[in-house]
Length: 294
Image 1 (cartoon, helix red, strand yellow):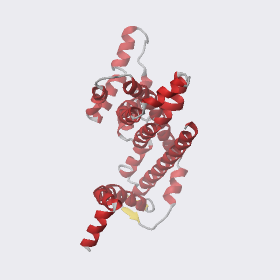
Image 2 (cartoon, one colour):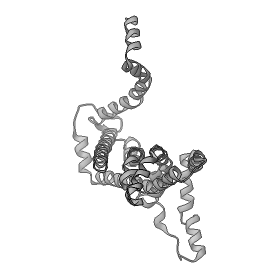
Image 3 (cartoon, helix red, strand yellow):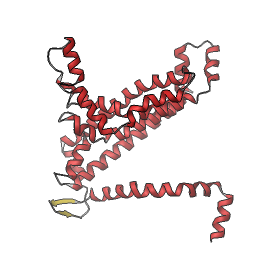
Image 4 (cartoon, one colour):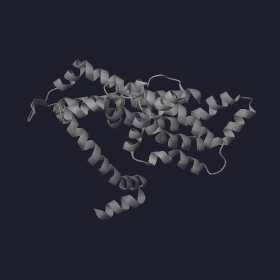
């Protein structure tokens, strides 16, 4: 049997590929699929009391989720905040990556290192730094008060949706830089020169040549930012307050002090399903857009 596998391995590229992927696949099954299976299982149970769970399968927890306006509104708010964060991050990161890819001639890697250097620190430290900046006695309000621009501190900057959006945008900006830069750097400059020779304007060259060729990086940046931020817990917990609370905070409460594990598991399952559907829609829409632009 070992000899047969050895012959198959030496002749088949697919066998070599699967053997190299097997450790990663095992790790994915161990740390992702098994917890997801447990979450799906617990979402069909019923929390009878603080220490007792009825293991009779039921879909009532999913019905309870949609009957609770708070949970539905938190799901919508989480998707909205993540969408805004993704959009702002792309609009700010794309021009930076475009400049580095096409206008910086030397030390491009140094530029990337300098841009991502602040993100090498702890995530918690960066979140707390925004508390210092956006607080009523923080750097931003103190500067505006000292300049006489405002007479009272801006209270909406802290413990609000705006605070969560600002902090998440800063926290995940570095993760958008790398896929965008790589996709722009790989573009063959001869395509751009050919478009210019055909008389296209700078905007037409960008829209018809550069942007379509960089779409793989755009898709990667969207997924890298949207998927984690929609389920972010730390940022809304620390600086979101009541107004900036997201569904992940409610899920944590169900698994914690509220002690309703089945409803928490059902909420997490619905959020995961929502993220998968939105990701599929974005991928399909981007694919169609690429076909139309090409």
